[in-house]
Image (tube, rainbow, N blue to C red):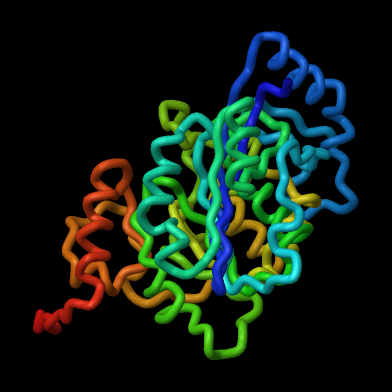
Length: 333
C-alpha cells in the first residue's frame, strides 16, 4: 500500500469546481522507499533541457528544493471527469488528506454542488481515501510526500491534471481549505460567462516588491542556494487565485525547465514572469488573504476571505446563503 498521499476533490458545474486534497501517510518502510527513490534519481530529476536565467544549476540538491521535475504517478485519478464536458470553472482546493472535517465543511457550504446545479467531490487517507474515491469519484493523488516545503508540488499536480485531463475547462481557481468563497460573485462579477473566455489571464491578491526571507527563524526561509535572486516577480498570494485554463499547461511546461522553490505562490509568479504573462488587477478588495469580520452585505461583493473554516465557516455560510435574496443598501462611506 502506498503511504504518502495527496488528493484532490472535484466539482464540475456548468462552471466547474475541482477540489484538491493532499495528505501524507507513511510507515517507516514506505518513507524509506520514497527517500531512496528520490536519492537514486536525483541526477535524473535535475536534468533540464535549457536553463532559465540563474535559477538552474546542474544536479542541484537542497533539502528545501522540492524534487522536480519528476515522474510522479497519479495513484488515484479521475481521468474521465471532464470527458464530454466543458466546465466553465474548475476549483482546486488544497487540503491535507487526513483533514476530513475541512472537506466536509466545504462540501456543506460553498462546495455543495446542489446549490449550483452541478457535480462535486471529496478525499481521505489511504484505505479511506480509496473508499472515498469510489463513493465520490473526485480524488486525485500522486506519490510524493506532502510537506509544507512540497506545497509547490501540490499546485503543479493541479496544473498537470488540468493539462492532461481537463483541457476543455475555461478557468481554474486554486484555493486553500480555510477560505470563504463567494462562487456566484466569482462567476458573474469577475469571469462573466457571457463573454468570450480570456486567455493568458491570471488574477488574485497581488503581491509586489517582495523577496525571499533569508532568516532561518522564519517558516518561509529560502536560502540563496535555492533562490539566488533578491526579489520575486509580482505574484498572486497563495490562499486563492484565478486563471484561464490555457495557462495551466504553460506553467506546467515551464516548471520542467526552471528550479522549483518551496514558496508556491512566489514560484507561480516566477513561472508567469518567464512566460511573459502579466498579472491582471482584480476588482478592488475582491480577494482577501486576511480575515475580515463577517458582514452579509459586504461579503456579497467579495470573492475570497481567508481564515474561515470549520464551524465558523458553516455558520457564516448558513447566514450568507439564507440572505442571498436580501437587498443591501449601498454604503455611503
